[in-house]
Image 1 (cartoon, one colour):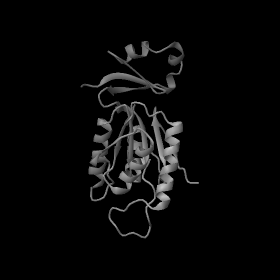
Image 2 (cartoon, rainbow, N blue to C red):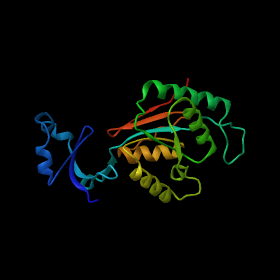
Image 3 (cartoon, rainbow, N blue to C red):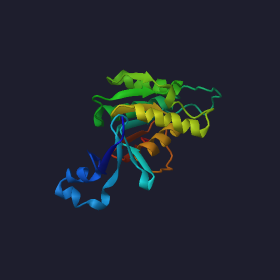
Amino acid sequence: MPYLKALYLNGKIVTGATHGHAFAELTDEEKANVENIVSGFFDKESGRFVDPDHDLEFYTKSIILIRHGNVSPFTDSFDPDLSEEGVDEVKRITYFLQKRVNLQNTLAYVSPYLRCRHTAQIIADHTRIRFKICQDIREESQDTHSDFFTRLKRTLDSLPDKSLLISHSDVIEVITKLATGIENDEAIPTASVTLISKRQAVCLGFKY
């Protein structure tokens, strides 16, 4: 599908035959906020918005990113399981998801690694969420950084409008950057929840 001429303002996408036609669709109040209007091109199929004049790219999807729970520091396994602390961490975020997050019509995916699958199982046991294993959200591991970046961009292109992913810190960092178009160097704690919507990302650490 070709990109549509589009304007973006505060989470709202408006398309038109030209950018001028798109501007005409805005309310008077929105038109007065012209300094915050981003002009670019929108791909409805992938949810990707591109502003080539300012080298800006982001996605309009709502994404919940969960890092797996803590693993034992004393294991030398390539694919370790959650520690007891990690299990407790995941139970806390499960309670948060049940009470504070609207998961209706949300499709869920999980990295193939054991610590992620165990995290998903705990969440699934207490919610109606069912997870599908997704190889493309595994950690960087043996990939080149370029290949890693490419497969996560491909993943973002294919995600539905509302999704939940259980994965790793490096995956969450890159997806957050790609989805918002904003650099963020903050560390991603274990068993944390990152909520992405309307180009904004909020990471809730749950370390208490």
